[in-house]
Length: 273
Image 1 (cartoon, helix red, strand yellow):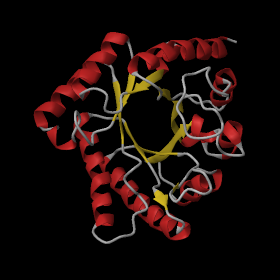
Image 2 (cartoon, one colour):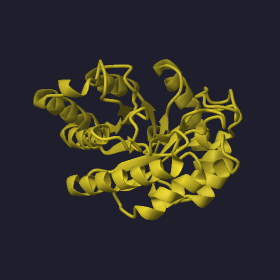
Image 3 (cartoon, one colour):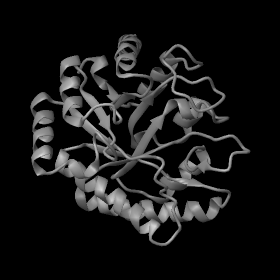
């Protein structure tokens, strides 16, 4: 596989999934991700016929599809009725991933409002249940390291720090729960990108998400406009025998196509050196 072919694009909900697959074929993109929550990809519109068309087109054109749950759905939910709905939401993503032929699903650890320990415990138990469901379904979940919020913020994402990420990975030992490494989020932590690569299990990493960052707050910048040294990043990741894909997540689709070419050249130079 060419170096650039390992770099995909997160479509989010920018296009109907059928059009997204056709767009990927047109532009030679081998890996794509999509959300299936709202229009134009509202979950309930994916009937058997739509799933068969998308799955068949991906197989025919060798497009690798992943799904991405919304971080706004609180995996750390503790309220009655709402917690059960979160379980159903995550299981629904797993069910649909099988029908679409998706190879992975990005999941999150949720968020807290100062009640951190209680929420972490709830998130852990929910992710354990959902991972067991994924094991039975034969689906791979990838837990994303999310971004640090300002200390004075009311809401804080879980699994943004090394400590919190390890809390989950140390307690859920399953081949069906891996790691989605968002590099721009890591710049907001004191350990930085290098610390995450050194301390977290790269053997469980199934995706590396690419965007630049200013190192100050959550933002998805075009590569080269922030502080990230992508040559150093690729060198560190590839030296861990990483053979998986990368995923662009910044700007418009055109921005990501342009950035993908730049990043592909950098990755190619690293591999060739």
